[in-house]
Length: 64
Image: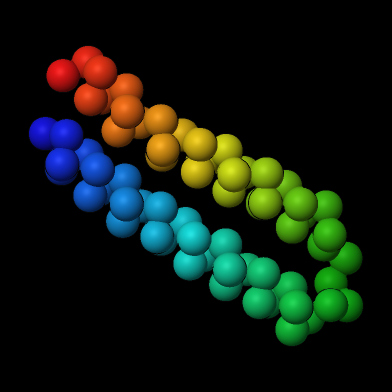
């Protein structure tokens, strides 16, 4: 159970990581977009997701 959660969290994290850098690349290619606050919000959201995905396997391991 723990390993299943760990692998699913890992794949979700990789997906989020890829989409985050993809959005960063789009913003880098199109600097004329009025989107710095949007990029900042995405960055904060990404870091919150990172914290959640790190804590999820730890919590599940403690419960198990």
